Structures are given as structure tokens and as C-alpha cells.
Length: 284
Image (cartoon, rainbow, N blue to C red):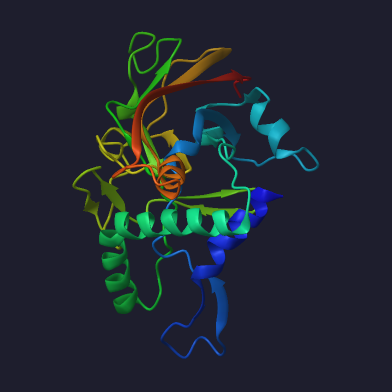
């Protein structure tokens, strides 16, 4: 209950009436304004790699069961991979309304400062493109070295456990369970001196090895697929991802600051998360 109340109070200060230029909108729309918001990187608890069939999830099967079930597909073109970061939204829970508000305000002010360079470019793009941009979901977490995807079998003539990232692309749009999932509105990089590697409206490379450069700001999920299909065929194989990152713990920083402790920046931790995705084949 406290978590729900805390979330509501985080959203309330930034609720706004938003209108876009153009005759296509006949009335004002009331939306939760996400502009400038970020997600605490300290919440990231793990990474998962799922096989998602292009034919879609079977009707009636829960998403949780479907994601974790080993899929049997007819070939490499019948699926794509979903890379998703798990989140632990536990941690310190404020005891009073005043404490909730104060910590939320500290977090909000930090996010506002941290994302100011993105907000500036976002506003410029929207003004020139009639609101044709979504504010990206971004963690205060960043790549910290080579993001690798490997196979336990020979693939593309490469030995098992060789990094195959150059054979995969990060796709911008996917349809999953009837919903359009869109990534990659922009690509900010860097922790201490962040910048826009690719801005709103610019074409961002889809090559996995070019997308996950050092310091890339992370989004909650990505969709990967083969750039070209392997020639090797197996009854089953396992694809694995290794994801090194630096996490910035904003909630812990806000709590410490609220308590009067002398803190100037959030704590940074270095982590390496790994996940496996076994897949079976019935070749057609």
C-alpha cells in the first residue's frame, strides 16, 4: 500500500494538461507528464532473455508462463529475443506522508537535473514535429563494457561461447500481444558528462555491437533478432546474454539526503547480469 501511495505522490506534482499544436486534436487531453522522469537504476535486479514466437502467444496462456516456457520453433526466422531487466521495487519504505513527499521531491529534483540535456533536445524536437516523440523510459543505469550474446553451439561458423553481437540487431518497433512496443527514441550515453550520441529524430544504428556502446543509458527492455539467419541447424541450442552495467542508486541517495546525511551524488555499483534462453527446433 505504501508503494502505491508513494507512486501516486511522485506522479501528482507532474500531472499536467497537455495540448499539441495542430487541428487534429479537438480537445485537451489530461496526461501524467513523464517529461524529465527517470527510473532508479538501483531497482535493477537481474536480466532475462526470452524467446518470443512471431506467431504470438497462445490465447489463454499467461505472459509469465509463456515467457519462461521453452519454445519449440520451426526455424530461426520464427522468433525474436526479448531482453528485459527485472526490477526490485522494495528497499526503504517511508513511514509518513511527509517523508514520502520529501523523498519523492529529492528524487524528482535529481532526475530533473540529470535529464535536463535530454529534456532540452526533446522540447526542441517536439516543437518542430508536432509532438511526434515519446519521452523514453530510461534507467539511471549504463552499459559498462561489452554486452555479449553467445551460443552453446557453433553458430555462423563461430565456436561456442564466442560473442555473436555483430550478428544481431536491436529493433525499434515490435508488436507483442497486440501492443506496439517502441524503443530507441534517442540514445544518451555517459555518466559524469552525459551527451546525446543520437538525438530525437536521428537514425540510431540497429547493430547490437554499435548500439550498446560503453555508457549507453538503459531502457527496461529490448527486442533482438538475427540480422541474417545462421546456416547451422540443431535440435536445440541455448543463447545467453552477459550484460555488464553501472547502476546509480537514486532512492538510497534520496533517503540519505532526507535524513541529513552528507551525500553529493548517488552510489554507483558495478554489476554483471547473465541470462540463458534455451530454444528447441522442429525444422520445417
